Length: 141
Image (cartoon, rainbow, N blue to C red; front, side):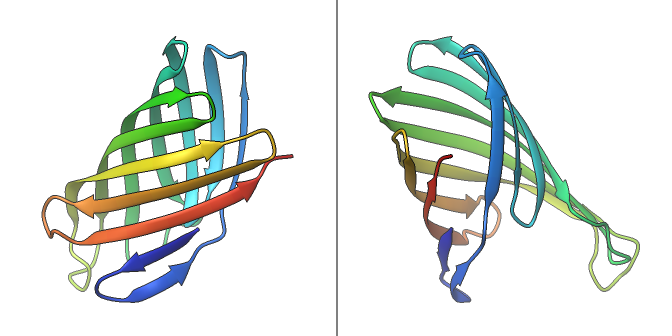
């Protein structure tokens, strides 16, 4: 995944995911900065709800971040739109990084073919107005 931030410039994050399901319900696990466990439930053909819980790979002595997200996926053929609401929280035991929480959003336009998946997206914060532009792609196997 390639992301571009107004404040820090571009960056690259590796991403890995695995999913299991029957077409109606899917359980997925992915990793990037940490682990995300998700559940996707089909509403009808081409539409689904998606929920997730994210936490770091290893908690640090500075604190413990946690993310909860809920989204809607609507697709037609191999293309889809995926808006999502995200709550991020950080529980800290130090005054250097105080505990905080807040809501953010994501919106992705994607292509999901048999061998390749690609996305263009935005990720933002309601509190700070910070906005990330995201370009991601992957190979399915």
